[in-house]
Length: 181
Image (cartoon, rainbow, N blue to C red; front, side, top):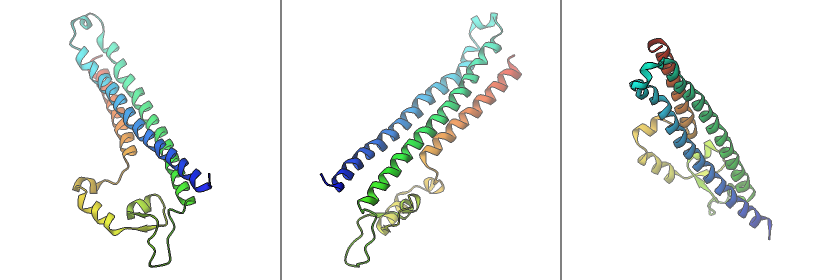
């Protein structure tokens, strides 16, 4: 087996690794979200139960938003860790592609470059390659107005989401302390 064939096999493994990390990020997002919704909503549901009228319910209910704060921190850290693993796999893929010569630019006008990418992708991944105006035009025409306003990666949006839930947990904790205890 020659070197290029080994690199192609390793490239296929790394592409699977990227897919795995992207799936893990999504699964973590779903599971942590459900846990946080339950923890943040529980005090308002449990507050009206008759059994809690006999005990100082505010002190018991404070546990839920505090747990939500902890879960939100764990979720954000987990997404960051998975994001680092994703970026490691992406960097490995780019290294293999460069070894295979997939990013080479031909000086011969009759020879097309081996890889054509959008301008945004080339800038984002620091690829010194040729961009394809057809790809750029396609992206511009298909992108919604809202999406044009945001250029933040999905992984960063997930982290911001869990930071927002962390803040909601803090606000709920303060609310319970001020009004229920």
